[in-house]
Amino acid sequence: MMEITAMVATVYSITANDDTGILNDALVNQTTPFVHSQENKYNFSSDHNFIVILADEYDSFCFDSSLEEEPESAGSLKDFTYYKDTVGMYGYSSAAIDHIFSGRYLGDEEYPTRFFDSLQSNDYNVEFFITNNDVLPQNISSQYADNFQEYDINFRDLLRMDMCIYKLVGYKYSPEILKPLFYMTNSEISELMSAAESYYPDDLTFYNSIPDTGTVCEEKQFKFYYIYGLHDPRNITRDLERAPDWSVSGEEQAIAVNKILSAYIEMLKKTGVYDNSDIVILADHGIKNHDSGKYPLLMIKRAGETHDELNISDVRVSYDDVFPTLVCLAGGQPEKKTVFELTSDDNERRYFDSTGEYISGNIK
Image (tube, rainbow, N blue to C red; front, side, top):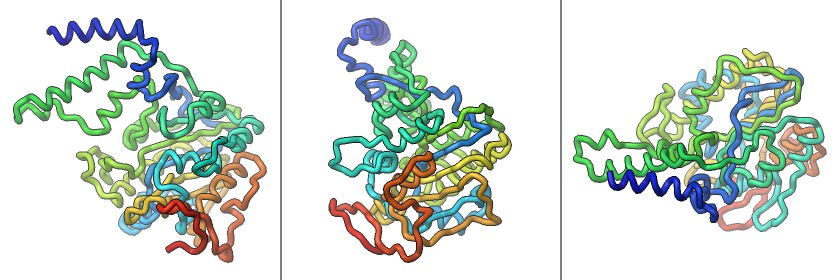
């Protein structure tokens, strides 16, 4: 009771006097706290949609295995072109995602905004559904995302943080028979420690948020969704049920993610906006053989594109080709070849390996 009384007093005191922003930093890991509103998460255009879904750490080898084991899991993705011979640029999310949307390399100070400028100049409503840190720079969100909102930490957020702390303490000190009452997965801890209105990128949370049909408007829409994909702790079974952290293989979680992506595609079809949508499904990096820069998943469906079955392309793709492709899809003028222009004669590609050196050639 003494602790609880002190906690309540501290909460009110800090809320009123957090001049340094330390509390906000602790909760949302940003100097200026913000969230991305989810109000129009599934609002699409009757004119044109440009949709990017990034599944973290989704390795193309895991996708291949999922197709062999349960091909129907990706049945709704048959209209896509799957680029199965890819190499990424960076082996960790912040640098990889930064490069995907800006084309810049490690060490470059300036953040090129050509892609987002192209979206703006072509009258897209731009919305990000991402975590508030380590995905895109805050100044990019504040300048370009129409669903960017500044956020004030409130009493409810503090209570959620305290709930997390007390559950951890309860788990540590309770007898074995009572520990299940206090057990939390890594995902649950992350959710409790996030701002209440923040977007939460857990795969199953994303799946459960998909409506039967979305809503439709006239303004062109750009949507960027970030989900955990195959990133640790892998804990989604092929039946789309929660499992203990790190208990699910990459191949099985790939099947689960395929089903989640398929559910999203089916929602677009029911909404009547699938045919007028350019859709890019990609990863920031892979997980193959502990060389995570290589082999990220890349699949693209152009508006109006249809196939009887998944179209598999054998052209050699570097993620250095992805940025100009996105610029092209946004209606801009790319300065390099897009993946649509690559041929089997293109044998060289850029890849940033673990040594920090750029290398060219056919990477095995």
